[in-house]
Length: 173
Ligand SMILES: [Zn+2]
Image (cartoon, rainbow, N blue to C red; front, side, top):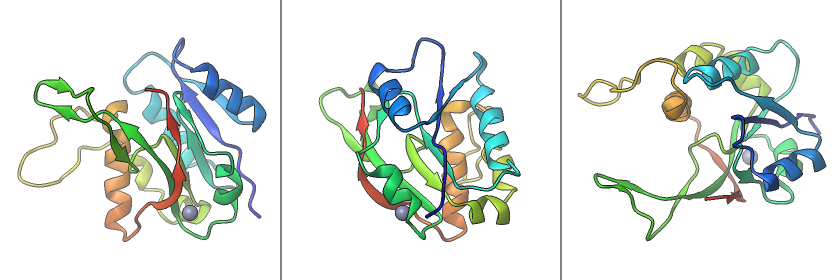
């Protein structure tokens, strides 16, 4: 079994008590992010390129993983694992609070293998770069937190990997 300490990035005042409890129970590393839009990116970049051995496991500030998540992550041969969670869909009029959609391509509760980190260090840059996807230019600035997950995971999927499903995490909506 591989060992990985889950990292819990959070913004000041935004760490949910249920996530904090989970982090304490699982000896996770709480990582307070700075207030800028690029803070998550630079923190993530350090994790991805960390010379210390180990998979990268991330649990975001408003997520509670299923009880066996770390156990199943540690035994999984996949390069990219995720617990999916519910989101409110965004429409042209804003968020639609009448329904939720399942989402498994974010960084809410995810594991990336050490091998993937080592063999593709360039993904640390890709997570901050504009995404070339279709004819429209990426409208978001480089290195901003709100599209970092999609920039990263779209590039991982281009390498032929898809997220391996480890069940549902609770999203504290
Ligand atoms: Zn897996």
